[in-house]
Image 1 (cartoon, rainbow, N blue to C red):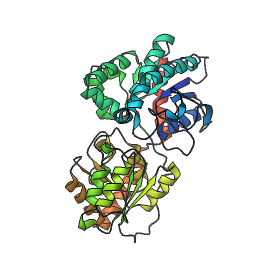
Image 2 (image 1 turned 45 degrees about the vertical axis):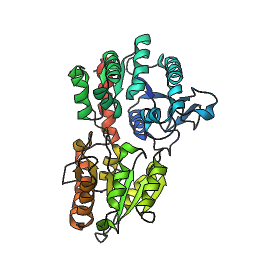
Image 3 (image 1 turned 180 degrees about the vertical axis):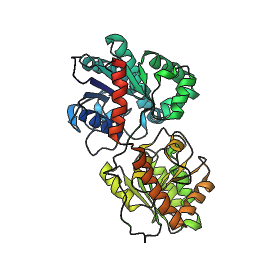
Image 4 (image 1 turned 120 degrees about the horizontal axis):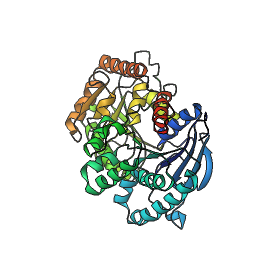
Length: 397
């Protein structure tokens, strides 16, 4: 790179927004926008989700979405909610597309990596490509493990082998949570290679509504993929209890489990109390949070879900399972009520406690917003942390 210029990035990811209104992995785009304000130039390389193929600017960021299976109408591996591991479990056709997707990913990444200073890969799949590109080009590699990839590395031998291989090639590892960082260290990755950047939230978009202190609790909100591990089936079962008969639920998101969840809702007599809103752009999610009373995230596994920060920034108390990085993000019984995943009765009790105690709910919502403000977790702070990582591996001081 030319002395005095900012590093150029090639960003590899298996999931990325296809337009400015697409919420899918929008957190990566938010980080790149914040880095752009610091002078970074980024080119994103990602497999297409079928929305578009080719090159365009998204959020002002050069974005390449490539096809990997023909006819394109049969593309499955990177289409739909839940990510590649979930899709592989659901579709034989998706499994057939894994090798061609990785092969094309490598070729396209090599094409664009020549002019970059740093390769930044998100999730293990992109990390594998990043490691090969780094090996071939000599460019330094930074990898973020974001959730399932970290937990699968802990639980499955093949994932452990691949994770160790990628991490050995990487100059720095930037996991989203302390728990994933600890898993990686336990796998033998040197602790001084593992960094824990702050991951931000847009506090201007996500902010509290003015309820004038008079509103009673009646509206729950879930935001996420509709797949079994997100636990919406447990939330529906809890909502069916007579003690919550006046409470409604807005479900934002989509996925292959949606039809089954709608059937469960009908069977439990919740048709008039549950709204299935599908995928919504971030500004609409922010508006829905200002209309809601509690965010519920009953997941069985998580990385460090940004929706929790967005809810807290919106002044919402959180009811969530005690998994992944969630306990790191909240102050239990101050900003959130946590329970063990899969325990429907404890989930119901947590929701009931907030529904039936207006003062507690409002104080927890206010404390949640204040925690976000005090912690300074904005996308600008995230960009500062990644700037230090990139400059450190490039020895720019």
